[in-house]
Amino acid sequence: MTPESLKIRLTERLQKPIESLQKMESGCRFPSFVCRAGQSKFFVKASATPTNEFSFETTGLKQLQKHGASVPEVHTFDEHFLVLEYIQPETPKVEFWQNLAQQLAAIHQKSAPSFGFFENNSIGAAPQQNVASDRERQDWAAFFWNHRLHNKILQLEAQAETPLSGNELKHLQEACFALLGERQPTASALHGDLWNGNIICGPGQRPYLIDPAFYFGDRETDLAMTECFGGFPEDFYKSYHQALPPDPGYDQRKHLYNLYHMLNHQVIFGQQYESAVRNIVKLLIE
Image 1: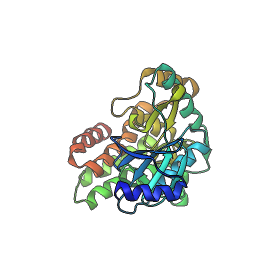
Image 2 (image 1 turned 180 degrees about the vertical axis):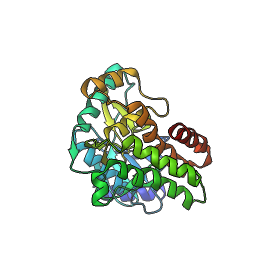
Image 3 (image 1 turned 60 degrees about the vertical axis):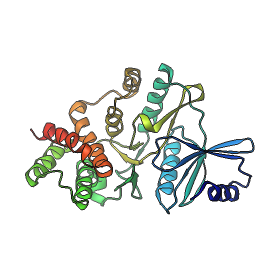
Image 4 (image 1 turned 120 degrees about the horizontal axis):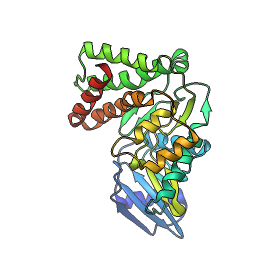
């Protein structure tokens, strides 16, 4: 889709003339733009080919907002573009990280009767499987093994990659059920892909969540993800744990939870993540 054709479609949807459409280097895998229309300013993602990911993102943002998160307002979307409220970023300070922790803890205290979600969606550029059987929706260990770890391993095998031997797979499954078998956490509302790239420090140090991979599950999965890729500042964890103290065994479970994200990165980016996957597997099964 050319910028000119995008302008025409945005004018039709927003019912106002587009004054400018400036391409951004946002880190988003879709071409992204800052759009000005009258007194309004929008953030736009566009795709030349039809995609259902803008629908998934819209649903995830609305679910997060429903459960207490600050998110950019969704103005309109279709299979070719997504138009969001533009959030003017600020440099994060201690106050921001404390606000983010308090917001996340409040979201995690909102729950559903069971694990998963009513639809499958995506995490980054890869599919995420949320729809589960009645048994799995009540059994966290079974859900996490079948719909997180094993599902990603099957995605890798479909790409002609074999991340684990049969023996390693067997031992990993045993480790998963050993760590989670007795744990029946609350099915908390989750961002699902919570790292530094998916948060914005907005005006007044207000935290905004973006690019969710929403589902209901163990709140520790979100917390574990924050420790990937450099982690969050200590002020965040101190504030979060004041609201929700850590459960015994988290330091072991977080490696299992982050294995999902490393497997997902291997699905998306290839063998550059194979060593990270193998290191976590070795830690879990030895």
